[in-house]
Length: 99
Image (cartoon, rainbow, N blue to C red; front, side, top):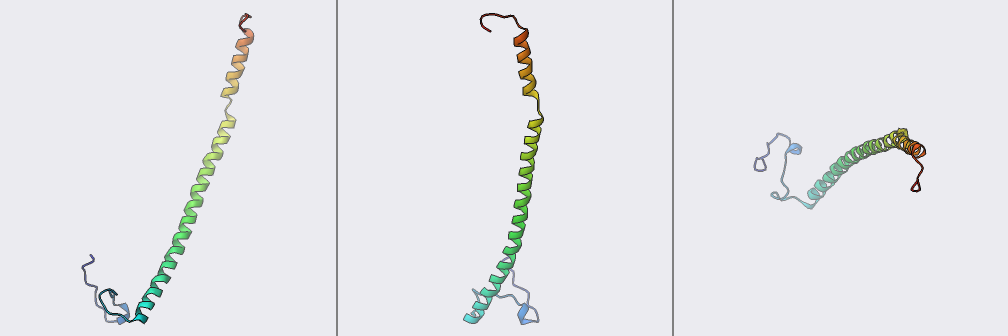
């Protein structure tokens, strides 16, 4: 794919060039760098926005799981029931010196 020669168009502003193979003036190289910098800034702002949205979504998911875990644990009465059962067993059992 890198060996393909770019298509020539009838318009000089749409022709692709390779700055390493063609001799360009300092002014042209500066312009190319400015355009590349502007394109990079545009892409990074979109990427940053996407990253922030993804981070917030993951954070919301984590907080939701965390909150649900606390809610479900507070609803559980298993340990309370086991403690009540053990207390009743102690009260109903025979009284010995070990109790």
